[in-house]
Image 1 (cartoon, helix red, strand yellow):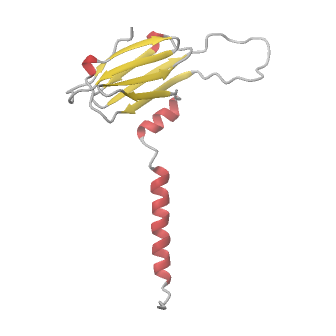
Image 2 (image 1 turned 60 degrees about the vertical axis):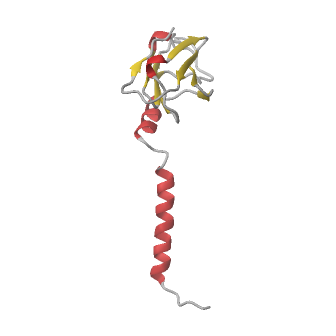
Image 3 (image 1 turned 30 degrees about the vertical axis):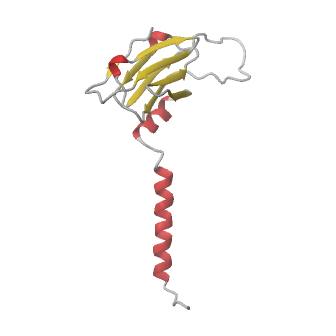
Length: 146
C-alpha cells in the first residue's frame, strides 16, 4: 500500500521522539539528586534480609559525632561533613583524590520500617544501620550512633 507523504506527520513523530528523549534525560534529576550533586556523596549498600533492612555507608575519615542520621517509615538520610585535618605548607600536590566538605545521601526504601526500633553502629569508617521492617510509622526520628 502506498501512502501519501504528509510532512506534519513526520514533524509530530519527531516531536514525540524528542519529548521521550528529554523525559528520559531529566528522569534522574530530582531535588534529592541535585542536593547529592551539590554536596558530594559516598558509597552505600542496602541489603534486604527479610525482616530487616541493613544499610552500610562507607565514611572513611569521618568522625562519628559528625554524622546526622535520620529515617522515616520509607527512607533513610545520612548527612555528614568531612574536614581536612592537615594543611600542606611545603610541597606541591602530585595527586590529591581525597574529598572534603558536606556529603548527603537519602535512600528510598521499598519496605515500611519502624524508625523507633532502628539502630546504628560506626566502626572503621563504616556506618551500619539496621532498620526493622513493620507497618507504617506516623513520624521519623533521629538515630543515636553507638
